[in-house]
Image (cartoon, rainbow, N blue to C red):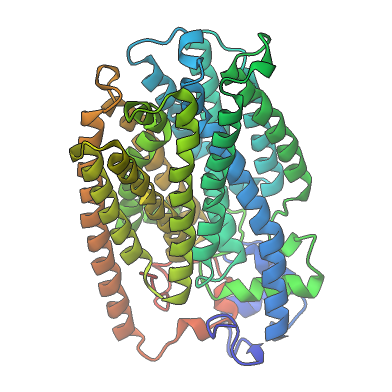
Length: 515
């Protein structure tokens, strides 16, 4: 066990001298006022002296990984399939059967994110006010219903409408998963867990490409369903069933985790309380919203999400068409998609392991991944050999690393429950905006090479490198400034009652930012 999580064999979390406000409030058991995180209620009646062994902490972490992380990964697995199935369906007859022409396919791709964008703010409030399992499970079931309905569309209007509502229902996914990472795992553990649930995306890509490959050209389907309809009819009902299951089994917080004993719940809370970023609080604090909007760090995350999606959206929605330009037919394009999925999976997991083993490397790994993307784009644009160009296209899929690292930085570097929720909304507004903008760089009259799209790749990726370098310098200097203010303080050793206060990172001089 790492010293940041549990020190030696037995760890004492005794609050030495809680301040008057905290002591008085606890005596009166006013645990839901506007100061305390809701996790404090778990310790009502205690003296907040709590000890646990390294073995207990390890057992709790394994339980969290095998239950919460598995549910999160499965949810993202299905979400990714629903989001990118349009690309597979586009080469299986969807464009013809829905009578799409000109830029209509690009608009069908982009309108998903209009729904995603519009739903972000109400979603952030609902996920704080409602039990997360009920809210998230219901939304998953609804996106399954919408995907099933997409199999019935036969026009641009009906397909675009279905894609819009799919975006509305999927809008909660990334904010919810980001919040869960912050609730259940320590700052040191968060990057790998974020990368693991994010790996559900390429796993979903593997599955979707495999089924699309099996479906394409299959004579056993007969004439009842078109090949593209089969994709939606398979995965829509699966998501409906999964959403209904989540509705009942996804706990609202670590304090209500059904798979943990009462003591294990306390261990789960004490493991992460040193994060100083909050676990759960139903009070919506407007001052934290204002602080978030005037803090440069959330805006940097917003810009990174927007720029990353220029590359990500291009690869997600147009990679199969680009593959046809490399000499592969519709049947082979689905099969060749496995390579990109493999690169995504490997790069995300490898990055998670690196950031776990080597502290403060999240921003550096993001910079390196973007340099690799630029190299890949240059290969695709400048080389003439199709096998070489295919290799260049594959290595561009490491772009996923940046987004995964941004998610882990939001979980680790933003304190205060409302501020974190607001920052998540900002990030996903940037994400949705980038996804809306990106398809417009892929002109129908430029397919399948899309030179304008690849120029957009160069510019957006180069800007991300510059912004990431600026973020690293900014956070490093801020940590140095805070070290001078409280040089004798070690935040990893503090688990006293002040950690139960729902305070932002700006309000805590003891807070140190992860790089």
